[in-house]
Length: 312
Image (cartoon, rainbow, N blue to C red):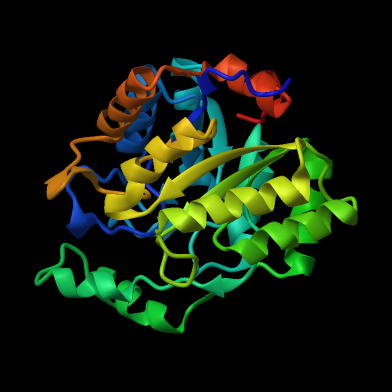
């Protein structure tokens, strides 16, 4: 169904692969912490939970389906939120690694980056003097040579494997305007059927910058390319998170928060949890005259296959 005018879908991205354990004690990386924070975020109002896995020994990004299986079933049993599994994983992973968990779990939703890009994290390294784990500093510093690969052939493979093969609905992650054109091209080829769900992303070094003019431009571009056959959401990195989400709400869009995207709850103040960010954006949404969509409302809006058809 089309998006009701007064409803906003809140996605919470629980841990991701950008931030490292040194940056915040609140960043979850054990399966127990990921499950606990995801469930709390759902109870705070998140309709969709976007999930990555990490090595429980040291917090480095992990593609291992066995690790995902230590928290995904627990989350599903404890709440009715839509579970969205990454196909991005980490820029250091192979495509096969990135797809392993989604193929194994067959979730309702998966993220899908709509193009290859530079994906640089190295400026964050200079903010810290000591590190909890040896892998963190080189992981960040070496990102100046990273290309986050998602070729048209990769996108076609993912669309057929997960979309056709598992009935997965994609969160099409668009880090720049060109990614919208990539998606339009893929729709023309029949790889994806409208309505599509866009995640417009701002503030990653290598993608479009966190300027509100860029949000307006990408929204106008999406209108031109997809007409009424799409729903959209916004995420922005770091201090831009709540500003962009607030503006998206006023534009009848949807929002994504979470410690994957920002470690903060306010200027200079680290968030205590994912749920704290969800509660704050939900309060803002309410004060603007909107309501947070329930998981079932999100399922209807996005045309999802249902939690009874996943493999966990």
